[in-house]
Length: 202
Image (cartoon, rainbow, N blue to C red):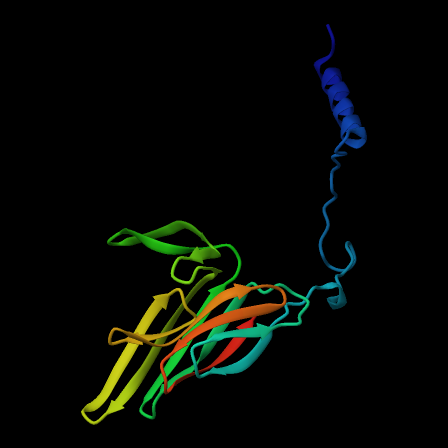
């Protein structure tokens, strides 16, 4: 009767031989630490640094605007923050963002929970007829009136800037197209209002 230990040894040797000569060549990797001795140190020059483009832009009319990038990266997100003014008495601070990679909005599940939606953005906005990324914003500000200061605030989805109250859109900016070479923004701005915001594109 064959010795059990000898059988185990033969099986182990055959497995090791197959690991080295087989199609996928599975090999044991010896233990090592990243200390610059057991394995080479990675130099900073070999790292791909994060790239971004930033600048302040003013919008004073309803139109389609384009940010030309001339960059060596495809943008994945946009941060927008700044102020919105109306006539001479209204001042608002706004912050918004857009995710240009595949993304989902949260939607109500119960009265105490939300769940990831089933619509993946970028998605065709039925109101605009163009493909838009996931984007949202909020603002806070005041209207100085003869009767006292009126405070307004709102958070919303679908726009990187959205000052909306009294049933009207007063200043809105929406990312409607993006690529490696450019970002397209559609604005809706009531006469006398202006958006002055910094864009950080990464």
